[in-house]
Length: 117
Image (cartoon, rainbow, N blue to C red; front, side, top):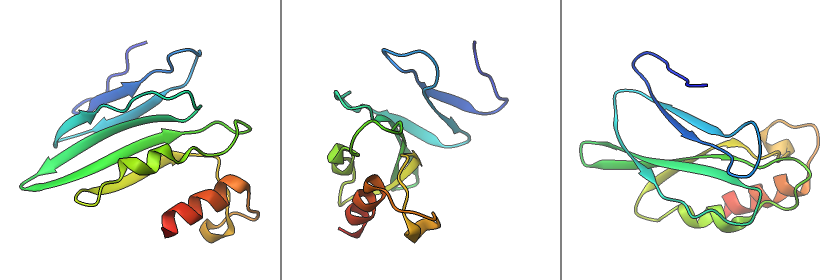
């Protein structure tokens, strides 16, 4: 099925070895470039784009990590570089009371610790 939304560029990442799902970013009216992210053996799905306006660059990473698939790999943290602002979005099945969940899980604690670093 082809997804079309008027005036948007659809940036998709399909699951290479599984049916269904995948990631999508909708991009409108901004110059961008795909970020090549090596696929690892983890279950973390990740796609990224760099957007440009003027002399500024912003990296945006869209991620999904299924539940019950082990710890959150820290490899994605290496994508954040000191000289480029980065935003990480997505659903990592990470729960922590710091962002409004009623309980914590190990992934949530790992993510909070990584964000604090």
